[in-house]
Structures are given as C-alpha cells and as structure tokens.
Image 1 (spheres, one colour):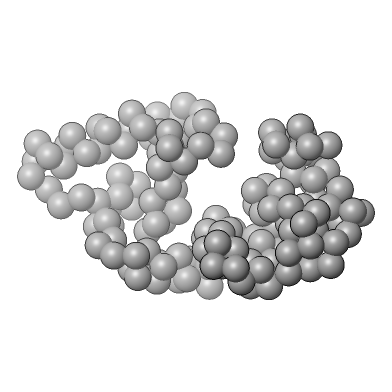
Image 2 (cartoon, helix red, strand yellow):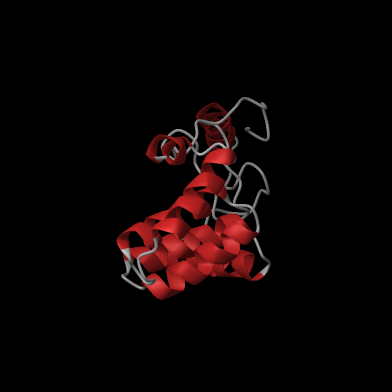
Length: 149
C-alpha cells in the first residue's frame, strides 16, 4: 500500500509505483505526481516524498544507498542488489542476496530463487527446491508463483 494515500500498489509493477533508492519505499503514481508538482511550484530540489532526501544524482549514489540499506538487512535492498548482480551475470552473488532477502520475508526473492533452481544458474538444478520456493512465494501471494505452480 502507498504510505501516503493507503491505496493498494499494483503488484510487481515498478512503472506504476516507483521505488526510491534512498529509503526503499514505493509510492503510487498519484502521490509521486503530487510531490513533483509541490517541488515544481515551490522551486524545490527533487527529493523522496517519504524521507525527503534529495534524489541521487548518479548510479553510483544509488548503488551506495542500496549497499548501505542491504548492510542494515533491508530485504528490498538485498533484492535490488541481487537483480544487479544477476543482470551482470554474477549468479553466485545474486543467489546469496536473494537467499538472505527470502529469509527476511521478501516474496519476490523467493520467486527469483525458484527461477535460479529451475535454470541452474549459480546453483545445481533442483526441482524440489524450485517447487519449495515457488510454494513459499505463492503462499505469500506472488501471482507468477501461483501461476507457475
């Protein structure tokens, strides 16, 4: 749910609900628009609508913030770091981040672990572990995990 208007956020759609790198919060497009309008009208610097930190100016700053949050055991940041590692082809690091995020309750991490076990990326192919992670993600409400089961 959006932390401002309490409307439910679309599941797994970052185009409709942006996530801010500073605090890892997702807000709905309407609240994001209202914040941008407030900043334009007040001639303010762009900032996160939740924590009011200025928007990072570079990818390095975004990665630095994500690493800081991951060190503080933020499962959303760990999943973000895992996605970055996965896209770079570093499946072992992605597996480590997703495993830790899944232990902390991140549903998306559970689903991504099932994918790693299905494809054998960074781990040995294991149908039982794939199904285990799919079941965990499905129980927590992940729509793709439910479909894949």
